Image 1 (tube, rainbow, N blue to C red):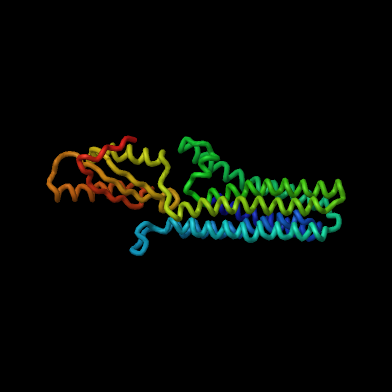
Image 2 (cartoon, rainbow, N blue to C red):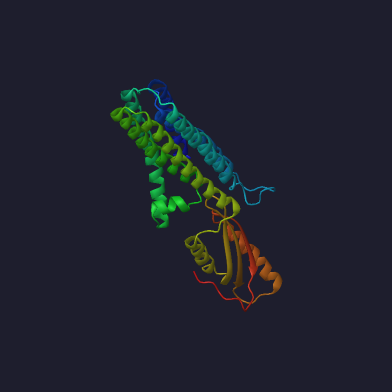
Length: 303
């Protein structure tokens, strides 16, 4: 939540500064960057809603909780990034190619880009700290973690902030080439490139959110860790089937076939199964666990 709130505040400040600079300078690249920042600020609102909605617990209508609501609202944010940021930037850049603007006020433009870079860096630094901490916890590279994580709001903020910093560099380069050559075409090209960059990030975020909405299995590392925990349970002798699926950020639905220790009567085994299910669900990431009995001929799973 801190990462999303900080990103929202920074993007709002940057959007206001860029809009003023775009009006003063008449730069196509600056206008594209303003649209980019307004889109990012709007997206953070969707991400804040996603965090609140996804945190609701289980009820009768939603036995797995509301975790998947996070992906729905994050999908809205990704569409907003594409529709507002990418489309406006590309369309304005194409228009500027046919109707080039006059020379921009370069000093104001560079000053605003520098201030924006500082503000965006503050937000990005917070996202990097969170990604690194999580990567260390799961012993994987931070970039690999941010692509694979079920925490869609963290992934959105990370990629949006990274795209913002790259977009600032593109806008600065476009303005510099405009100043050096006297041709506003470079400014227009920079606007189009910013739009393409935003479109790429939006498509990436849409793809990952859709995968989690369709139902994505937990990573092999997570599945192995859960299997080890189950085999360590005194009531479970072996596991022959295990399915672990995301139902929200760091929330899992678990289905397993197990062989219970000992040789008890059927009604006793049923009670033990229910008790073990409840004990597994005491682990915060497990939203619901469903256990069935293995047959003798089924091979055992190894972590």
